[in-house]
Image (cartoon, rainbow, N blue to C red; front, side, top):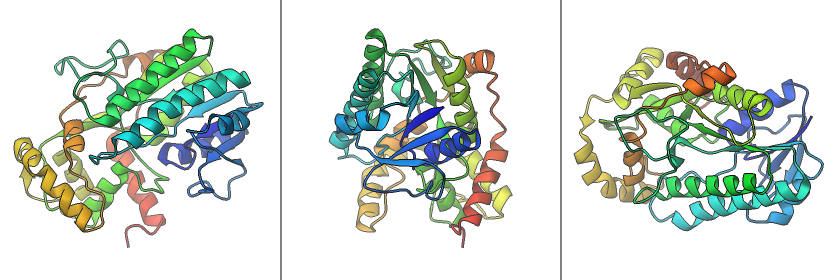
Length: 326
């Protein structure tokens, strides 16, 4: 099958493209500005594509049966709102339009758990949860807006499904991703303190397998939450310490204190030339979307995420092979 992948050089993309190639598929990887990092050397057809250039997407999707739309702007830094909306929302509108124009058989849209409302907090989020709205971070709003464009495309005849993963960890993290940076910062002792929050963490390989099964089986318009295992940041750091032998930070900041200090931490990181880890947006994530159900994916797709300890171990094994732990 001829398959196009946007965001092919990202964390999920690097794993998905490898799996598709191993399965004998003909893969057309959309790359931006000639960047092939993460999939260079693989037997794929590289095509320059720009989410904000619908014509380039039409050329890329021409004569393809299936499109995986992974490309997104993931940002936890205040001040990036316009670009986040443009790439995630308007870019998805262009992807939908290009799929309709070229007659693509199916679109698999990678959304995020952040596209869904975190309320009510005490009830596990499932596929019936409404899209988020109101005073939420720009990334969350942009992913919800992107979903609305996909749903509009479905109303216009597009065969599309939606995938909502949680926080992704695992191998082939060439960026590294934001979650990969957390693991590296813990290993290299670049985190002076932890935060009293948590999240649902999932293996990138399980997300890829779940999405591919959904692409083959799911009915038009279906949504699947691909979650894994909820752990606090403290628990994750303790797991990292057991796997790597590197002692985690002892100080755990209460959430109220972290929120007060976030603007200062953001400014300090920028002065130091590093992307900040603790911002008002990332702290929002660590106190929302805590309970996520993957029961529907398990029932319909046979989805069964592996234990988090296996994921973290595999991530560090890959980082070691890639020379990121030296």
